[in-house]
Image (cartoon, rainbow over all chains, first blue to last red; front, side, top):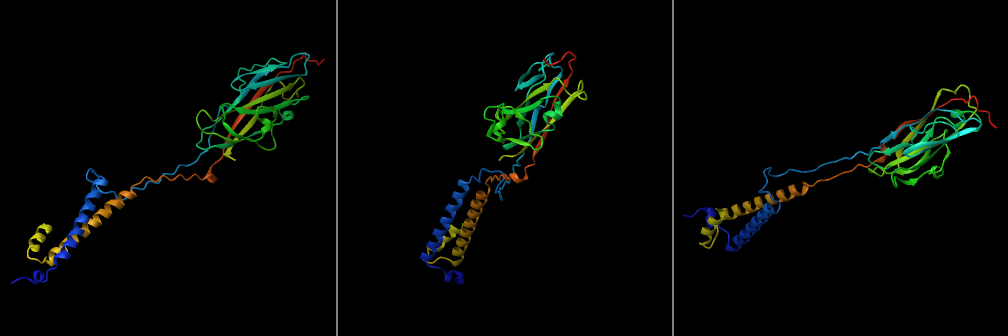
Length: 219
Length: 79
């Protein structure tokens, strides 16, 4: 006597459909194994593979040459002043006095962060406050040490041209300073006109002014 | 095995219901396994998210100096 399961068997057509579905599933399965190279992996199935990588932006300025040092000197006899000028990475020159420009190179500023930034500079003293005397001048100019380092100039009056330093507020001299190696350096040059009649309180003493250099988000 | 049993049953004109159910279950399992493989591999992509939010950038501030010594010249009488 046959069991109920066998006596109530399904027809050949239905079986064929089921068989076709089974074969289809088998093909899909084998295809997925081959296509995704599961068989060759030792790690088996990966549950998920999400990698969240966050890159923080950072502005960092590096002032490689951070001191313009003219050392001692005097205005030549018979002259009302001496003019001292820095020239980028070359030694400074002067006329009308006997200062040495050996240690008087321009400030060299680099953006060593990972985004472009703006560059602002501010002096601590005006010409009169720094040098005193009759007709002193204290000026700066900004230029590219690396070609095209500054992609958008700020205060154009200071680009390659000496202008009086800013004391009351910072001057944004470059709106977009690049950060790529070999394209991120700028010079800040200075021009001093030293009067012969400086105030006795600063005569023979080391006088200095502090320049504040700021890097912020590129404009 | 299931297919072999099925062939035996087919010879009688009718196929055992158990065999058909077994085939269906196997096919379903294969489909589920295939979907698992496909979805697991699709999710294994490297997603790089760069939170380039400049509002959190901290300004950099450096300082530099300009210095000199001015010695008065005793002979310095402007002409």
